[in-house]
Length: 265
Image (tube, rainbow, N blue to C red; front, side, top):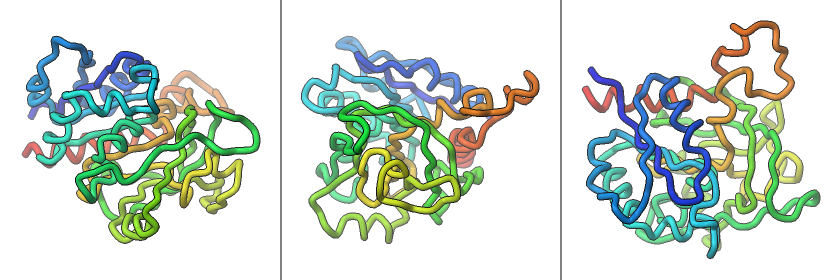
């Protein structure tokens, strides 16, 4: 059986395409960078098993983060492919795009949430730091099938990362459906709504949400930047071999591979 094929979607202004491709390949998948421009045929995406929409500033976030990219015809095709069970991972700006399309949380055929500007007492606007997120989903999905650690150390780097909604019942529904994948926590997995544990003021400390089916994930922190020991802060660098070992975040990408291989059988 051939390895699963991932299309790394590169919008104008995206800037995480190389590390996105690298981490997919490290997990045992094949990955191609697909440049979005006026000449691309969305049908090209049919040959891929999954899609990685990475970080950056698609179309310079000129209206609001992810809003213009969400209107690109290629996102309509990705939405169609997701309905077939293919994997879609949106990280940072990719998460913003998925929310702006309504694919996340995907309970209604409309936009139900927003990723609003950060609120914290330290920085107004863009903020980057290392945080901890607690794995909250108690249902096996495309992103935890390989066994994801209870608490992950992972970086955030965004200006509009605050999950929010005006629908008072939506969070309750997401909890009921096991759609909240990660919540900001401290190192021991304790939830605190205040800064610095919650770096952006996100509602219910939400860091990542899946669709109800569990094959689409919007995550604001960057797992591709924390998938090897050498990437982690304060890692004790004893040897080259230790530095090159996989860090816990790589399990997210290994889970994608496991899910897709099972689907391909």
